Image (tube, rainbow, N blue to C red; front, side):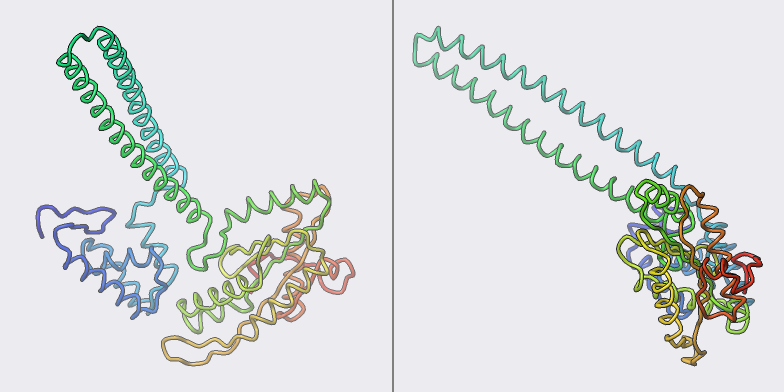
Length: 369
């Protein structure tokens, strides 16, 4: 390895060794295919480090996990990423981008100040030329003054050109920083396995939507969804297939929830959907559409192309009540979800079912299998 190599977050980078780094990249992609792992940045980062053998502890850890679990699971990926890779938090990344923006602004101000000073000198030069023109008595004197004017004007034109290029460069850098900040924001609010909104963002969104519903008086509904018998399914077919099930449900939610609605992964095999401006009767229709859509999809095990049946959901539906907290709304949706489980799973229950006494209101929470 050449002396110009360096290690960043346990990943080799070497601008002088294109072929080597490309080989590592191709090997990482090949491993993604072999392990049938989602090609998300985190998984690629781990497998690139493995392919490059830059971190022996990571390599040994990954081999042991593959031998034990037989696949590259979401749990393993999360653990390896947290153990071996330095990840900056949202606040730290925002602070870093903010610092860069401040430095860029300071540089721009300096450039503008210098330009202003140069413009002042140019103005003084023009005034001097004007005074000299008034005192010209011969062609030779006029030529000298015009040469001086030409030189000053050329100098100012060159400086203006440099200023334009510098400001264009600053604009480009600011645009890049803005994009970096936006990507950081999106990543911090996105569940990596499913691409849905994560729990952190959901907590923020539900509070905002409740505030809006409270102000406008418009209805707001919440769905809580749980994959039936997921633990048993996961234990029987393996964590990798379990991840495939979670992604299948998430993709179905993306297809059926659009516009102002928000679908999020609440945790594990649990999901939530916020439905603004939606009555409980309309929310029940959406829930039933999602339940049927998920049940209609046949799941095929990627490693063997074997059909392993269908996935079903239990769904609870609740409607926001004036002046209640978001915790109360979530709790009522949770109780409705448990009622759906108690009623035999693969069905939808609402708070109206609880009120009517049609089902048991006993509650164990979203962890019900």
